Length: 354
Image (cartoon, rainbow, N blue to C red; front, side):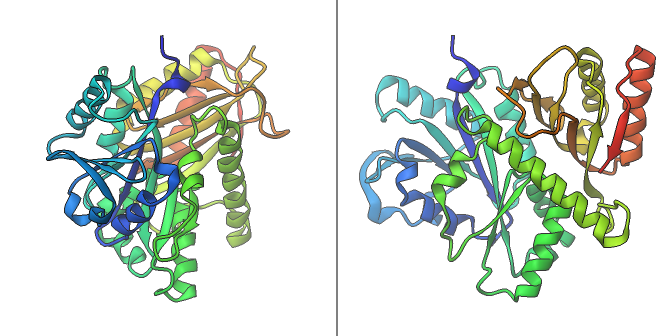
């Protein structure tokens, strides 16, 4: 049976209209890191790949000189992936080690993520990789303020790629970066110069990559710590919602080990009731009776299969859970877990709420 680490990762490249997705994708397609990859694109015409073609396999599929396979998404994503998989199994196209999916500029990534994480036909062969969101440094603040799609794309991302920074004033880029950090403390913000950046790092920094997952957890925990310090310096107390957005992020921290059964039931009930507004949840847990940390990662109504790290990424053994939510008060989530613990006889008291 295929283990979780052997499943083919699917990376999602999203971003609002005009934010530079196509420029980034063109750069990625020319990089050796995409050899042995398949790329699903909504429209071939938007991506300048004609000069790289070596073979047209059919009306929807081309093979590039780099070894990368490009296909057009004609219908829904699931159908496109299954058709691609069938071509792979039949030997019509070369085998691939990862898939990269480009969404439209107005796409809500959550249904895509939900499909990749929960569909019974896909999850035995594929898994969700990294969510990469492009953000326009010139228009990003306005788009986050005016368009729910742009806000959602930024808040569910694992990697936020700032584009057009050469056209934006440094002060505006700094303000946008601060806004993005307030919205999504667990995401890494990287800068693309004319669509160029370290493609290999972008694709290898995958939470479920067995060679990288410990480092990735350490990275977003460090981001959370920096965000906490910045908020303390801002006004002496923590207020991640000071931008007035309906969407905000916070981190719950627990000193004592958590009861896995109690926590699992509570999280299941929370997502069942409020999953539409829990945009992302990531956590590293100190579970009672378990020596190594347990990592959780979910979106809306569904959570990835939890996994154990071989060791703690640092000396901090506290449980830390990052939430990105919409219209859900931090205090309400805190109180619900505390109440659930009391009713279940648990003793995991929180030590802080970042």
